Every structure is written in C-alpha cells, then in structure tokens.
Image (cartoon, rainbow, N blue to C red; front, side, top):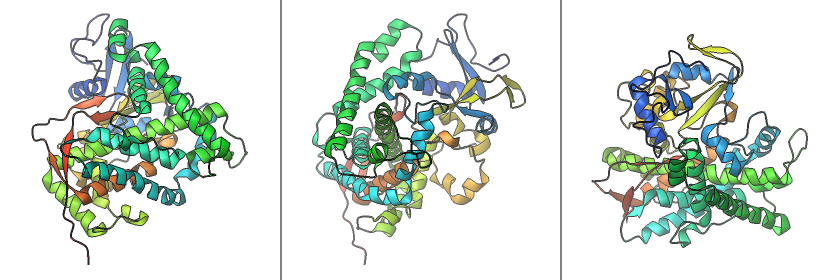
Length: 459
C-alpha cells in the first residue's frame, strides 16, 4: 500500500523508523497513544516493517464491506499458526477447512446447545465462588477469571476438567499458552537480541506447543476410545460431517480447532470479566445499580438459563468494558480488489491494514467527547440505534466474526451476575490500571477482597 500522505508520529528516523519511544511489551497501548495524536489513519514503522492503522469509524465502515475486503491473517496471527494451524481463528478464508469447520460447528452455538451448556457453566462458577468464599485476603482477579473460563470451555466443549481451582499454580496448559501467545505476538520485533530476551526462545516455544498439543491429543483419544457420545464441540467434530456434503474434518484439523477453542474460548472472556470488575469497583454507583438488577431478577436463587439474558444492565457493563479494553484488541482487513479507501488512500488487491479496536471504540465521531468515560448506558438500545453500526466490534466483523460470541456472552453475564449476587467487593484504592498484553489484553496486578453478602430471601 502506498503510504505517501498517511500521517505518522513526528520524529520518525531513517532505518529505525518510529522505534524510539516504542515499548515491545506494550504495542497496543503504544498504538493507542500514537493514534490519539495523529489518527484516524496513520502508520507506524519499526525498522523494515510499516503498518497502516485505521481507527476512524467512517473508514472502518468501508473496510468492513465483505464485498471488497476480508480477514487478513498476519502479524501475531500468522505466527500463531505454528500452534493452531488452520483453526477457525488463524485459518485463511480461502482454506477449505475454515468453511468446513465453521458449518459443522455452528449447531454448537444455537440456543438448544446453549441451554445444555448452562449447568456446566454454573458448575464451574460454583468452584470460583467456593474459592472466593475460602479466601482470607485479596484474590487475583484475572488469574481466577482465567481459571473459571478455562474450566468452562474445557468441560462444555470437550468434557475435560483442568482442575484449575484445585491447583495452587496454573495448569501447565495455561503456562504454556501464555508463553506461546506472547511469543507469537513478539515475532515481529526486528531486533533478534531484544526478541529473544522478551519473547523467549524458539526451543521453549516448541516445547510449549508440544505441551498443549499433547494434552489435546489425549482428550481427543479418550473421547474416541470410549467417551460418552455428545454434541459438544468435540463430539460434533468427531461424529458429524458437513450438513450438505457430509465431508468430515481430518484429525489434524480437529486438533487445531480444539486448541483454537480452548485458547480463544477462555482468554478473551476472562479478560472481559476482569475489566468489568475493575470498572465497577471504581464506580460504586454503577456497581450498586448492577447489583440491584441481579437482586431484582435472581434474588438469592441460582439462575436458570432464561434468567441470564434478563440481566440487561449487567450485559451493558460487559459491553462497555469491552469497548474501552477489547480483549482481542484488533483485526486486519485485506483488499480483495484495487480500492481507494475514503476516496483518498489507494490500496491494491492484497494490501492490508489493521483496525486497533481501543481506538475505534474511542472515536469521538461515534462515542462523543467523553469516550474515555466508563458509561454502560452507551449500550442502552436507544443509544445503540443512534450510533454507526461499525463503531463497536469486539468480536470481529463479517463472516469471520467470533462463532462463539453467544457462548462467551452467556458465560460472562452469568459469572458477573453470580459474583455481584454473592459478594461485596473491596478494591485496593491505590491500584492504577495496568494492561498486560499478549495477543489479548488483561488488567495486571488487579486484586479484590470478596466478602460474602447477607442476602435477603425474595418473597
């Protein structure tokens, strides 16, 4: 793509580009900072790599036109293919297994299937609550939400228990996954010594991938050799063919899909829950409003499936948390044909740009001058109708949008509602939000002290 005329940060230098002032540990936050200065379209150049970022809602509206643009698998996603291959998240749309797996797995996210997942989600949430009931001091929110969502996807999708709440240390799968995500994200660093120091070694990454694939292979083999028939994700992949052609997924792709769902199915949801709890505890009035809704709808009862969707304000809290810090922080779009973006920026077929969601979700043209303020009422239906349709994209866009969106939202609303129903939450008043970046975003070092509430039974 011809970047002539596209703004960039002042002070760009020959050869090293915009390297000065950039932190390889925080590329998303660096991009947000630069975009605030020079956006809504800009470039960042680090040594020989120049990336075009687009965050203005009008330009993103064009990019999301499926007739002219599609998903681009590049940067960290390209490097993640060493782990997930042609899984749904990392596959090129042109790869046959993407469409095949997508069509086979769609029934796993329909309402009938969701009803079946609900008691499994409750079972995992009970373990979180028992852990917090027993806590004698602050709990690490992101770590515990990761335990919760890992157990949920493991059990609901694959009939596998990681035993996360029975461990004092994270499951080896999680430790390996965190390193593998970090390694993939940082492979674009052009300074080998810095890359090795921050991202780790290729040997360690190979060992981490082996740890993850070995576990997934064990789970698949156990199901093949005598597991209960099920229409969960694994059951569909093993037993079902394409609804029209009957074609089946091959064993390698089943492994790739399983890894994809375990990783993507818990990393993003745990981050969303963590950010929601951070913002609620920084806004006691909003927390009280969310809790009042839970008390009115659920009382002191354990929620049934249909009552989760009735927590409309709790859902707005999660939406607003994902607006400010979308845990999957961006997506790339590639031109199918020669186009002129915004009537000004020429793109040839195959050119791609990156949409940084924390900037799109803060565009004043869509969100107003107070876009930095946490306000769940932005997602009141009347407010949503007034806003451009492409201003909010935490689950991606088009045919490559997250297939598990409804699963994640039901799980997150249920978990957040249960926490608000059961606990008063004491936050450290001195904590300042720090964002941990891998391929996803989470609050780092955020703790809460949960205290069991005295619930008044509903008459």
